[in-house]
Image 1 (cartoon, rainbow over the protein chains, first blue to last red):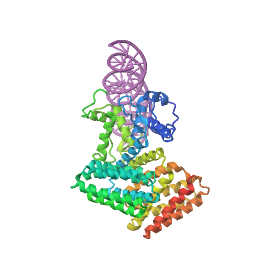
Image 2: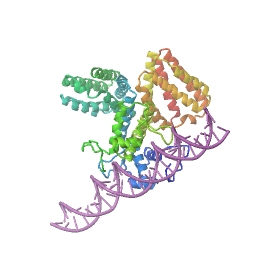
Image 3: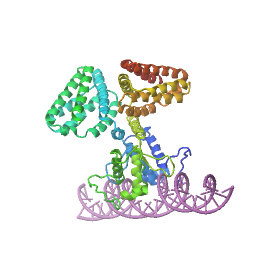
Image 4: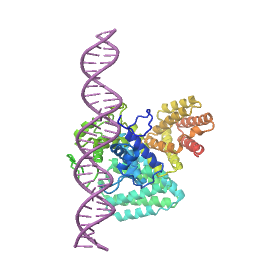
Length: 242
Length: 242
DNA sequence: TATGCTCACTTGTCAGACAAGCGGTCAAGC
DNA sequence: GCTTGACCGCTTGTCTGACAAGTGAGCATA
């Protein structure tokens, strides 16, 4: 296709652009842990030399990895070297991917909400059994009580609370899926809470529900916690969604 | 940063490479449905003209969207125009993103399996209530019975069966998450079935379990179906893993 | 010692070049 | 008339060279 094609021994079978091959190679090095999290990559020119391909190719490969979330751009503007992402960034990328699918496939909001109910229900039930530390959830509730009518502050605290619950389930996969779900859901829902006629009242009600859920967990009442959170989530969406 | 910067009225606040801006713009056009699925994009040169940016920039933007799964390369080799992806392709990309996270975050296999149990359990329970058409699942079982000792054929049929169950749950979000999970799980597990000492026997056993699950669903025994599939999945992974 | 200047290096972007493959046109041959 | 083969343009993939702008390190000066 182009000139040198470097020292790659690509099987003629596998017809993929060089840039894709390069990105795969780098991806493999990353996910296999060969280069650790937070590492700065060499400059583009160095990569050009090391990989034996042109800079455009290297750049395209980097862009692919960046889009997949495996690399995240540095903070400075001009000298920013891409770094191997933290899982934080990566799960953000996964969330966005999920959101893309959900939007393109036009998954109904109700289905997303039911999935959320299922996951969070399972998480709180597990938490009631294992009784992990729930300081974060407690803090979040305190923040909600302090929020008053500040919708934005409440939203942030609500996020923290539900994330804490997902973590408390003890299953590392839950928070990841929940994160993806959250992005997809809020894409549907937008800023529904802002449209509430009486934000202060709504916030108070939701906060009370949160407290009840947390109490049920700490008391070890798994089934009750599940019922409460199911009602909590369903109720919220029933009210807000259209 | 570069020369023309085109007719974009980007706020100086938002410091992002032009290629990223372009990709965002295109992404928006896609997910908002402005360009429909399967549409072929204009050639790179045309995009260059339309967007007022250089070809490298356009190419990087396209690569980003491709990595996100929003665009998929055509089938021909040289004249392949990127097309707006089907959800099929997109959910594949989401699956890969999920896999990245899972591997980098080192989510334990057991957690993934439990999540799968939860989802499929809920799906079959729902299916037992709603009794949707399950012809696909039945076909898949027939294919398994015909597979004999052909591990690859069995795997394909197994995939179809479980996908059919996920679909049967009636929740459009399930199959998407399941797809993502599957990629992550098989990344962990590799080709475990191939290592089974007696593939034929293992296949027969699994097929029997599948049949029992399907029967329970069609009989409307939701709880039983859930129990069976839970055992089925857990058992499989307990045997295969490690 | 603190401050400011200069310079090398980096990324972002563009323009131009070429190889290879695909599709259509058009003429020659049956 | 229909098939076949050469040819030409367009497209993608890749490389190279160029330049603007920003960053940071080293160095000179107050």
